[in-house]
Image 1 (cartoon, rainbow, N blue to C red):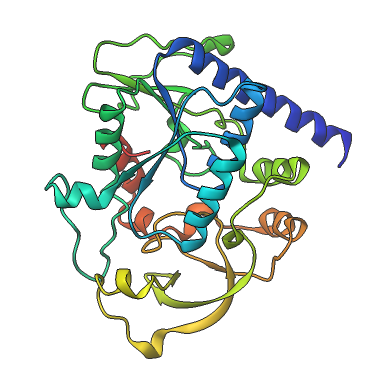
Image 2 (image 1 turned 90 degrees about the horizontal axis):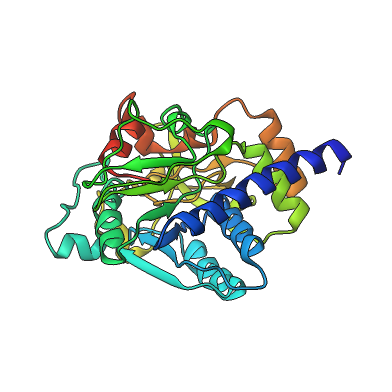
Length: 306
């Protein structure tokens, strides 16, 4: 790896570790949002570095839609053990059963938006005053508006027009009772930075990120994977003739009902890095939930979404 890249990654790592330590210093009950995706994996890796040889001083929280890739859940449990971290899980299924959220119906049904209710309820149950997230500014235009320390009001809502200045890396974590912050240590990282860092550090990943053969079907402009038989039965029927086997990989990991695959033969980190360098579509370009409207992500974030 060339020296300029080593220095670049070292600067990003130092910045992220500084933000993680500032979060631990300024807040009483921070948590780290963990999806099992590459960004939250890198953030957890950085958290272990930031506080080593002590254990990560805050729990990891997974908001589980119940529509996960099997590979994600298996990897999550293995990685948590490797990191010697404490895991808390908030279940969207519980929110539905309690009447806190309503299951979507129809051909585009997804539980992705329902995560907001479960997230806010989980933060309240844990009395969390800061939630570390793996969002990056290059992902999507709404996320580009976020600061490192992003204020949320007592209802968990975000106001992109009312954010605090962050001059000279001075982060203001002051808040009123009931309010909390979302904190984004990877704000200045790009997708390429994440992949280069994963390669440099030899960080383990779910197999979903590497090319593999999978049954998929074309829906709303993306290739979606099939759920397990029990979960798929809750969704609209799929014409069996539309199901094909393709060699694909996933650039993001999320709810199976809205996370699109890309056709790919990239089976190694070097191949993935080459593919990302040549890509002309952002990694969230394959997320069906982001296509619901021009401001889909920003609308969800204002309501309390990640």
